[in-house]
Image 1: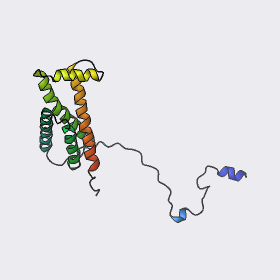
Image 2: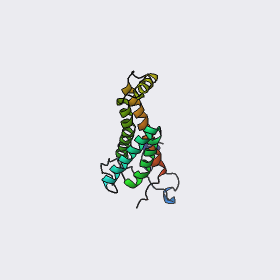
Image 3: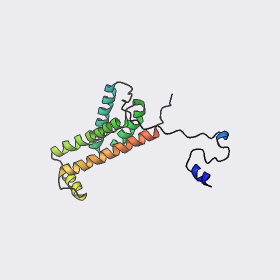
Image 4: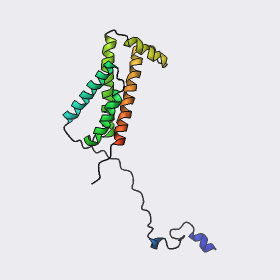
Length: 168
């Protein structure tokens, strides 16, 4: 009986039949996590991607003027679909998508506020309705946050539906 107690917890003391001979291997120890700081491989010239971003800002801005509020989502979706080809890191692409949404909605809205149109009053009303301070800037910031959320969700959906490139 004391011999059994001495075997407790020792490697190989509890054999479950002939598992090892049946092809069951001992699991290898997991490799420790090593963060990688490699740059992502981008395909195509950077000027083409900058021009695409400027075109997206112009498209979102034109949509803002005519009342198409959903265009930041569409631009984010297009960016998510194109990012598999582009090879940008997710952090870089999300920053670009957020900047496109802010510029696309922010420039036309700010232009109308500075022009003295009723956008300032509507922005104040939006801010007060949502519990923010009564100022046009707070309402405009909330509107720009909505644009960023739309663009990021569109980007996420574009990345989700695009298949990953085959591993070589």
